[in-house]
Image (cartoon, rainbow, N blue to C red; front, side, top):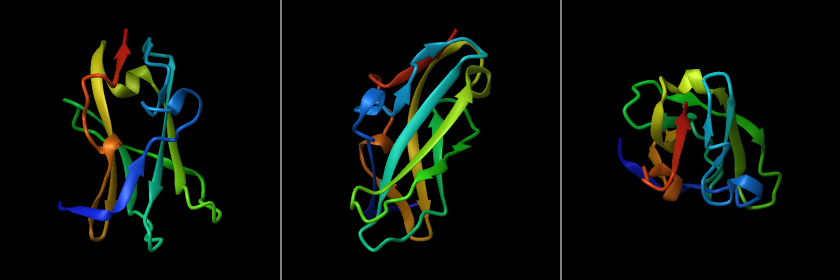
Length: 122
């Protein structure tokens, strides 16, 4: 799928979500990991889905719309809270966000795997 360079994903920029998009980076199988990301498209095109992907795990997890733009210009806030066992067996995982559109995929820093952005399921 090609990138739709007009659509972007960006970090929420507040609290524990400033540059990583996750609150709680390490926990057990029953602990909750909370993920957040911002979606923006200059023409307002809605994504067909926004997903969280873990490196080496086939299943993607769909995020929910938490807060629509409301005219702020910052974009829509999406999020997901999942338990460690839903991520996978005990290991450290790199993660990224994906926004699917009818015209391709959104771009932006959160769409890339980064060795500095990981979660650990104990």
